[in-house]
Image (cartoon, rainbow, N blue to C red; front, side, top):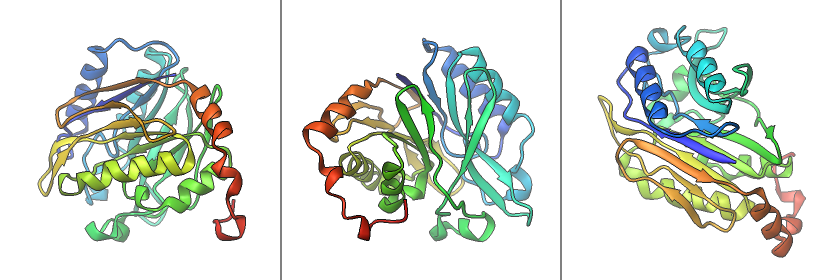
Length: 258
């Protein structure tokens, strides 16, 4: 499976500009059919707490549908929806190669350090979808610091994780270290897709990366806009889990409900 991730500099609260930027980056890349396309957390707006301004941007879902069907590829992309009580929903939307929305994961851990928990509703469950033999689980940014949700997904059959983010430059080393740890401890692929550039408060260092099930780097970007591209072979997960069956030694009495 080909991973095509768009590490982009997001214009602040400007969906039109960001959709054009994402479209251009993909257009300048050879995208094989049946790839997995990935866009960052809140890719159309940046990490804004202004829910009333950015939620339910009407042009975003049609754009994502068109993008996935154009390349005949599955797509994961950050989006801001809105809950019934007016709070935002920080989501990863999933589209099929036919441009049909398959579902949405809602960020379980809003980033309280930045006040996200005050204006965004937390999600309640992990989501796993199948793409051939790949059982893919999306997470969002701050979720990366909570290994228990990754282990829950692994116990439910996940073998590939996609973490979309607006992860700031001052904690870049945490980003790469935690992504690698999640890959090693779950013996799974981990794709970390971050943004670059800046917003009114923070700088972002990119460093999007794909880790294999032994923590090996399969592809990594620097701090510039670009495309993260890697070819994943599910047999490398299957072989490693069989050769070094650490997951069989999990003490289920100490794990989250699976």
